[in-house]
Structure formats: C-alpha cells, structure tokens
Length: 395
Image (cartoon, rainbow, N blue to C red):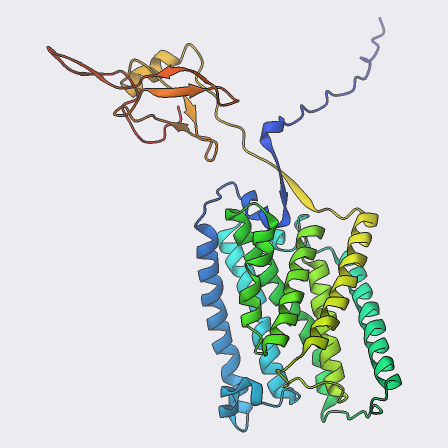
C-alpha cells in the first residue's frame, strides 16, 4: 500500500504584538528605548562623557604643547593664528575628542544599540548623509556666489586671493579633521543632549531649544555672531528631530565649517574674527531656511524614517486561581491586591497603613474601594487584611 506524503500546509503566522506592548519614539525620545530606563541615567552618562573628554584632552594636548614654540599663546584662543597648522590641529582635534567620549559613555550606560545616537534606525544612514551634504554644498556655493556677485555690482573692492602658508596641511585637515570635529559636536549637542532632555520632557521643542545655550557658549563671538550660531543650533536641532537622525545636521555643520575655513585659507574670511553684524545674521537665516525647506522635501520624497517602534516587555502574568491561595498565604494576608507598576512591570504591594484605596477603571471613573488595612481584635494581635510587605513582589 503506497503512502502519500502529507499535503504541505503553510505555517501559522506569528501572533501580532499587542498594541499596548508597542511604543513609537521620535529621535529625541530614543533614550526611553532602554528597558531599564531611569531618570538619573543620562546624568551619569554625562558625567562619564565629561570625565573621559578631560582625560583624552590632557593626553592629546601634552605632545602638541611640546612641539609648540610658544605654548603660552594658547591662553588666548581668540588671539592665536588659527591658520597655523599645528594650532589648527590642536583646536579642531581637541573638539573631535568628544566623539570617543560620547560613544564610550553611551556604551557604558545604554541604551543599546549604540547606533541609536545616530538615528532612529540604529545606524548612520550614509546615503542620506551624502545627499544632504551635496544639497548643503550646492546651497552654500550658490548663496555665497550671489553674495560676492552682488557686492561687486554694488561697487565693492575686487577680490584678492591670498593663499595661507602651509596651505597643503590645512587642506588635508579640512578634508579629514573638520568633518570629524563637526560630527563630534553633533553627537553631543544634538545626540546626547537632545536625547537626555527627551527622557524627561516629551515635546520636541524642549529637546531642540535647551541645548542651544550650551552650544552658543562654546563659540567666543559677539552678540551678532552668537545669534548666528544660535540660528544654526536651532536649525540643526529641528533637522535632527524632523529627519530622525543626525545626518542632515552633520551635513550642514560640515559644509559650513569647511566653507569658512577654505575661504579663510584664500583670504576671504578671518578665522580669528569674533565680531559680526546684522548682515551675517540675515545671511545665516537665508542659508539655514533654504536648507530646511530642501531637506524636508527630500526626506518626504525619500520616506526617511523619523521614528522607531519598540516592543515593551510583556507584563507579568497574574498567578492562576489555583495558585492564588498559596500566594496569599505567602504574603501573610487574607486579601491579595495584584497591582502592576507600568514602568517596571512588577507587582506592587499596597501599604496596609493607608487606605482604603479608590479603584478606577480605564477612563478614571471610580468603581469601588479596596481596603488593605490590617484589622485588630481585643484578644488578637494584628490580623492580615492586606499585603504585609511594602516591597515589589513578583510571584
């Protein structure tokens, strides 16, 4: 008798995750992707970051200071010649050390994966970064070109190019070091700080605006120059939130710093100049506004991910009806109240010295009273009428 193979049947589809176990997070809220989230964790992470940055800065500065002819001139950063290759390397390289400090601090404290510092996808989106960089480069070239052209048409002086000494070393550092320095600043000011504020405050405006004063304080300009820096900081914060990652902000930051440095190398700008004016503020507003519009359209067309959906751990199961008498006897109480803490998903024991408790339904309407207070009788000591422990208990 021949045996026919059993007909193939499609395996059952996995059961969908209940909606109550899903949580969608914007970039500034990614700190809450940590299942062991606690309000104090970003403070410890910041302390570790700052300590590591100080240690790395000292180790980085010692050999460079030994090579300098006059190390004391570093006491006045605004007075040094920033087009000196060694000083340029020292100033930009010391800021770049923020990157390893930020990575190591996040690796110690979480959340994981480490790439959540980069974007909601958990990685750096290189193609999107390149597209944003090309868009920023085109905008800077066009706007700066029009600015120079209008200045010449208005009777301005003819442009005279003066190439900086040792321009080869400077060009190499513009290509290699400046992008790392910009990325490191974004990793801290738009990465760590935005996600720190996002752990405590939900609205993105707080995460965008609160780090701005710290970013501005790191740039020693007058009020006009710092206003321009604040505009850039707000723009980069909005870009990070709206595109779900650091890529667009990094692109804007890199192109801006490289453009200014290259112009300084040929005598069209002064890196040591700390003064500004309303024209500079309007110029910054124009470039940043155009870049915002362009990136928003690009992100919408490319359907860039702007949020991350995480699966929360399922809440603990209540003990079965057969096990509840055992659990009640272990608690030493005649009434067991199984209350779940939504943050830790552990059972809570209600303090028996307080009560009765008002029980509400999902819409906040009172549906009854729960009395867990212990009762006493004249001939007997305290008798269990509720949970006898104030500690979390998971049966």
